[in-house]
Image (tube, rainbow, N blue to C red; front, side, top):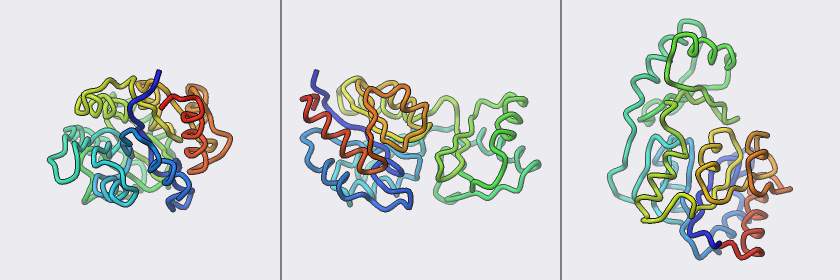
Length: 226
């Protein structure tokens, strides 16, 4: 089977840990003859800026699937889950000193500095019955709806593109990429990926960060999967 598109995470997947773009990974993406969709936990303007600079299309997934953009200069499709995330934040603020990040730009989730006991926070929200989850991407802590993920984002993107989610190869590094890798037809984990990703991936790169993405793309090309 030949796959028709690539969905790739940004931070930790086509960047180094300090978030610099890896030009080997970028050149690998540019060499592809299939559409490339950026999928990130970051905000929409970040995703679009990265897409412009890398030279891929404007269809992007942002805020862990909370936002799907059909293209540059279009009206994005947004989840309405931020209200419950805010209630969860308000509750946790009674227990921890929380610091919001990008709060003026976030539309569907809340992102926090990594300075509190995440496991305890997860237990508190579970005990109170919130339909939200806390995700640690190693760059920040995300409070997001359980109904929204990069997987749901990829399903919507596939619909917009007129193909199936199984037509995608998905590449990622963190737990927020799990659902995206699960719904894609073929999945790649870079070498620095969380163990959960490595256990479900169809191919795990020996190289980390952007070099791992370039290795994964080489594997796809060598095996004529794209």
